[in-house]
Structures are given as structure tokens and as C-alpha cells.
Figure 1 (tube, rainbow, N blue to C red):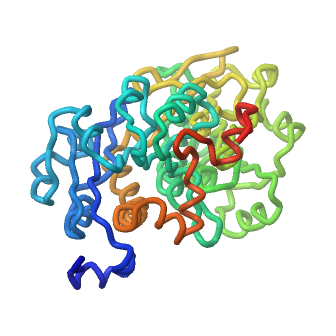
Figure 2 (cartoon, rainbow, N blue to C red):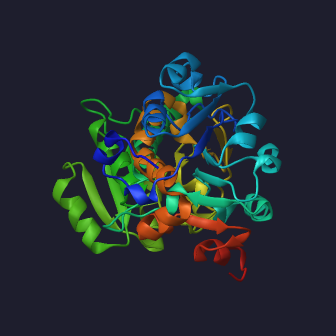
Length: 383
């Protein structure tokens, strides 16, 4: 096959590995999920490399990208989700398929999206039954061992989680009626952030920027030292233990749960009994709900009905927080995922994963078998 010079200048693949692939971009149908998995600019990059991109009608409209922009980029528009799944060799999504999509997934089809299998047995069993290739954004790692496809959405979720927490502290939303940053002569709200990763760091920075009194917890002393070095003066660090969390809760107005164990179910750091330590109208924001949540009383909610109360404590557990700001989120997500999508399309998933061990770690289910240990462990299954 002749490879045009412009393909080689991008430096992603060698000519001998080059393939042509059909890529499908379905519309997200999870409740209030307004993101789309790829911008028109991303589609154009794939088309220019010789691939064919099919986009479902209005897939990008809620993110600010109408069909006409995809067509200008060289993509083709298909009327239904069934047609997109039927024709594509690789499906690129934002969120995991939901029940009505399970029958559409074909044997040998590559699905590249967020899956979070460890907290969804029905999804796991459905994808195993389909014998598809499930490559999860959340377990891909880079050369430094970081999670490059989680970072952009974690940045959005951390910032937005704090913003939503501040909103639900307002009295009309059921909260205590506290302004996060206070005013002269009145103390600011106290914010407790559990987890010092990307989500927790962004949440703490946002809360600190609004003037709150912030405490951020983690079990890694090296990470706490790092946070001490660059966080503002109104952010304190605290070693994460049950005792320390219990000591903080009586005076805390907003808790942001930002704990992550890649690919595995999140531990519960605040139990139901511990809610009794908190003031009525205080708020819990569980950003880790995709992985099961880090509060025992957490259950997934939607942007349509984002909160519920237990023991007078407001729980915000929206499973797709970045979906509330789809324009920003879609741009950030495509920036991160596009280089990997190009590699998968150019080389095929097997050669791409062979060439990049970090991308290979994204494989969770292959041809009906679980290949990611934490998923099997979550359900007590053999690999």
C-alpha cells in the first residue's frame, strides 16, 4: 500500500503497520450525557489518514458540534445508532454502552470508551457475551504510570464537583445556606477533600480559589508533601485515616470524594454511621461514583435528579459530572484520546497494544474473557 507523505510526518506508525479502519461515533444516550466522543477536528485527522468515520445524526449537537461540521471534516452521517454499530470496526464513545446497546455490539468489534466494569456486573457480563474487544480509557497508562485518558475528565469533574457542592450548600437547594468563601467578618465554609490525585487537587484548588477553608487527605506522604509545596495557604494537608476523617466531619460543610484505585472498586471512606457526625444540610459530592463511590450511602444519580438526602446530609452522586459542561469536556477528551484512536485505527488494536504496553493495559475484556485483574477480583471471578 502506498502511504502518502503527510501520514508519515505525523510519526505515529510505520508504513508496514498501516491499516484502514471504519470508525463509528454513536450518540451518547445515557441520561443527560451531552458529550460526544470526538470533535469534527478529531474526525478530520482520521479521515486525512485514509480512515472512514461514521457519525450518528446529531451526535455532537449538545456539545456544540452540528452534523454539518462533521461532514465538512469528511465524516459521513448515519441516521441511527444501529447503523453506526453495524458498520464500524471501532466504536469510539464517551460512556459505557447501556442495556439497549448491548445487542448492537458485535463479536470482534473494538470499543474504545470509559467502562468502569468493576462496579457494573451486568455490563461486564454483556460485553463478555458479545466477544468484543473492550479497551477502557480509565486503565490506559503512559510511560510515567499516569492515567492520561482519565486526567482531562478528572480535571473537569474535580472543578465542577466543587462548584456543584457550593451550589447545593445554598438554602434553596436544601443546604445549610453557607457561602463557600464567606465574607469579611464571617468564616468561610470548611471543605474536606478525600484523595490527592487529579480530581482531589482540582477540587481543592477550586474551593481554595473561592476562599474556603480546605483540608485535603491522602494516604501517600510523598503526595501530601507535594501538595504542601504548591497549594495556597488556605489548603491544609492531612493523612487519610478513619480517625482523622471522623475528627473533621463535625465541622465540615462540604466533602468531595475523589478516591481512585485504577480499574477497581473504590473503598468506602465515610460509612452510614459517620453521617451522624455531620451537620444537617452539609453536602457530600462523590466524584468516585463511577467506580462504586467512596461513601457507603452513595448511589448513582443523574443531572436530571442530582441529589438525595440521608440523615439530613445531601448526596450529589452524578455518574457523569463532566456531561454538564459538554463543550469543554468534549474538547478536553478528544485532545487526550485522539492520539490513541489514531494508533488503534492505523495499526489495529493488536499491533497497537503490542507496540505500547501502556495502551495494552487498557484492555479489560477480549473475545469474551476478562484480561484486567481488578475487574475479575471485583466479582470474585477467575481470569
